[in-house]
Length: 234
Image (cartoon, rainbow, N blue to C red; front, side, top):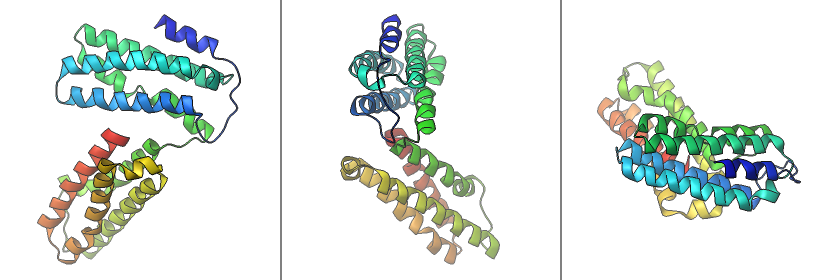
């Protein structure tokens, strides 16, 4: 932990603000996201031993990535502060896991990407995870009908649901457009994003038929797609 903080202090050197991350910083962020998703997946299924192993790997990888990003972080003090805060959270999560407090570890890991995410937004630097998060927020407006059955006999309700489904479809199509070529070609990404968009496209048919059971099945399917997209690419 002290070594990681020391690396940040040594990194003040010469990065200018830009609308994309330098490769070394991009690697730092991508690996953080990858390990965060893995740790949370294990914690959700109560595989605490595997979660702790992945937290330890996250800390080791983070420190190595930080060293490689030394010059790229440069004189951006706000990024250096975000990186230091992230390092502290990773360390605290590992300590919490080692003492068996996986509730605390999960809370820390859930928020571990927040400091760098806030820095990116201030710099106008966008990532696929931003789009996935935004699309998820748009989808929440449609998802409320999964747990509270709408009255499909009412035209105003049907019109509102149709608009919510179209808004969600636009949001997820935008994520497909914003993904880089490698991600767009990824088999899992294609299955999830195409599955989500195709499922949303069926909502008008369910509304036309006034078929509440059909709509409910679609919403259950869409929620699964949205959660998996968030866990894998958010």
